[in-house]
Amino acid sequence: MNKPSFKELLRQDVKTVFFNPLEFGEEHTVNGKPMLILIDDNELSEREKRIKSHMDGIYKKQTLIYVSAIDYGPLPGVGKPVIIDGVTFIVTDSLNEGGMYSIHLEANKS
Image (tube, rainbow, N blue to C red; front, side):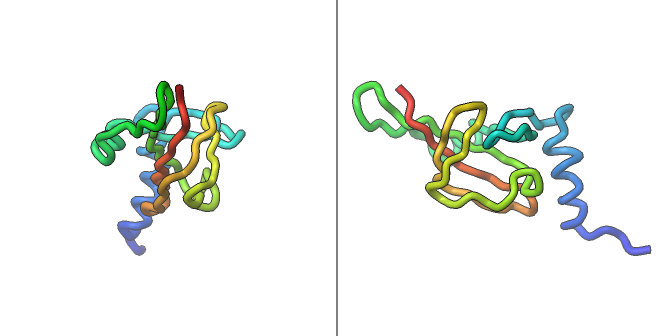
């Protein structure tokens, strides 16, 4: 009997650990579909360390989410809208990290 490869184990961990609601996953509505995601504003702070100011009283809210590639579907490209719990964000960066997407998003806020 063959042992599972590291990549196979990682794909299993995406569901059983990272997106397990008893561990890290939180249910949100993404593009009209309920799914488990991770919202990681701490990692975003480390990546960005800034808030973009544009005009008086308006700024860009930035967030970083992780979502299962299987649940989400095709990796969204830069400039594509993503709606999370009724709030529309625009993708500024997205990566497939072994079956899990990291998606950096922005939305105008006042």
